[in-house]
Image (cartoon, rainbow, N blue to C red):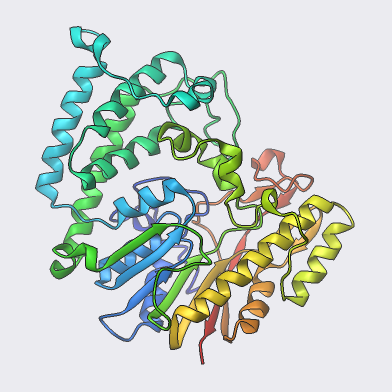
Length: 420
């Protein structure tokens, strides 16, 4: 129960900058803080997260004054994490946001003669997809707002505004509000973009103020010495051998390419990919790029894949690719950790095609093939993780509770390895 954090409120889990942006399977900062308390013994620690996602580990490390490094293949993850881990002087940011909202209001107001003439940033190659998701009035207003954001000269403020813009896209579209998969709701009345953005930016400004106060002064004034995140492959970390004290990461799941679908509104508006299919191919475990049968070391994993293959060849291939990709990540984690350092992989088990996918057991076995000693496996209930709890057993995709034929991850595990 000590790992469940069931008594944490939403404001606890969204403290500081952690509420900047919605994110599927976003894990809570309390887990990271507890792992830091247990495994970090120096104030000059260097922490890594090879799948930083929504930036929970990275921002928490910065709040403690640790160096933070990591990767993610997802373009919106990079922006979110960059914004969440960057404390901006609160009064300066407040004034910047006030000025931006003043100009945005004037731009989208019909009374302003210049409104019709204002540039609108609507990525041309994604115009058809944008029209699919957004009513024309909302599209025009979002385009005008985005055009203003792009003109912001302070890169930190621009990233902050882009993350706020990205967060409101689902509310301002006809995406079915409670659905994690791309589903249109033609009866939905989308929120007006300016109204949604004003409300969310004000929350973000408050979060930044709280974050700024906890980040040590020497980190705030030399952030580039402490924060080094990149958009890239988890199997290639940009740090020296044996330079990392602790790895804490919430691993992707077998069908992690779904994240590309879940973030497609941000991807098309911020023009983060030429096309969504190609973008999906880069996500870990994606069978799109698999031509040869994937090789991986876990015997438990082999058994899982064989059982799935009896029902569905393609899904079995996807699982095999995922386990093979994770082997590379475990090997790379071993390379970068110092002797005595720990890697902590947060992962849940699930069911696909009627077969239990024993991710945690596979991870616990696989890290040992990479050279780690299995330190411990922590099991925890996940009352507050932002995660679709149900799946359709036929497709394996996240679904609403009413359509569900399978529970996804009612519990999760923290697989901890120690480098000898």
